[in-house]
Image (tube, rainbow, N blue to C red; front, side, top):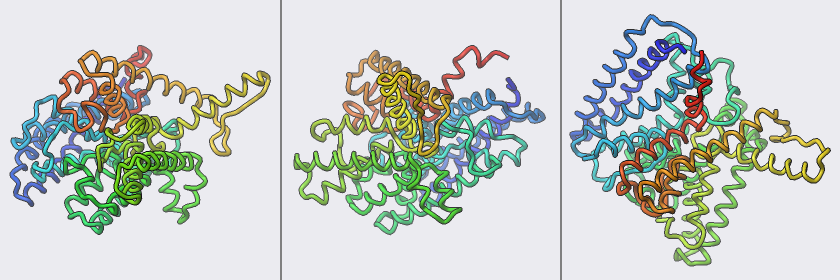
Length: 483
């Protein structure tokens, strides 16, 4: 293990992240809200920390190996989350305990969208912008951004990219060079954000709200500048725009790149994961719409469809925006939507959850085992589209599912031990492990009232969800630490 090389990179990355504390300070200056002091202080402290981690190791030049990439990824997300705590903890306008500040910071960075803050719209513009920016940076992954500039720093980035990008097949790159891949990811990400912000503005948001909500929409995060979330705007047009961009953000970004370079959208329709994803969304929308229509939750059919579409897409894609209290909807709908969040979006997108491709492969592997029971001598393969997948990929998907279930059970039992009721513990674990945000029971509105111990457990769940379980679990194996 190249510990000094890891510290060198970690120090540089902290310095890079410290620069992201300057835009909120500029927002504070523009609006004159008095919140700039906390951000400038946090900027100075994080820059000093980064410098002193980097400086003693500045002459260490060595290529990162696979193990180094895993360790650095976990260290960086953990350290980055703690650096992100400082503005929230220092701000006099936001009297948060240290635990609450940690929860809010990690929730933003991991794009979970769970919050402990009440009266969000009363906060200074700088803090509102910072919360939205945290999600935007976390959406694609600050490490992928850093990978794009690492060649200039003399640092290889492939191992970081492998550890960070979600999905079962991590060796597929859009371009031959990893730095070019990261740059193209960010070009697409920025273009989607700008388009989404402009659409929100045309639909009636002011520029501040449009940019802030575009940040959290493209990141599939769910933070809003209002307690009522998207419900504050009471606009079916804004709801529809949000749904469109959530669906776009939940599609594999490699397909966006292919569509842009080939000037064709046919790849979207050929991709089996996208077809499955859109099919799942259509079924969910129909079920939710039919149920709320039968139970007359809304005054007219148009409103019922718009609300059903918005809430089904928002929860199932793990965004967590709200226009109404879906936890009070009739019958099975609240639990159905929570379970839908386990599927999430496509691999290599900004969504959370297991990812659609893994769910599809689990289903097809299950069908194969049923066929083998009927015809033991038969030879059956698992296909994704027209491709026969190697057995190694299928095994990795089952291993991931088992690890995901194990982490879920352990964290849920831990929450029950803190005194939470069954529904609250189950939904909070699902909401944080899937990077969803809102839950049921005591966490339907926010997480302010649950015990501090439960909040720390949920921070761990957020990290497991954002880094796709294995990235953290591998550090707990004795094999990882053997030379």
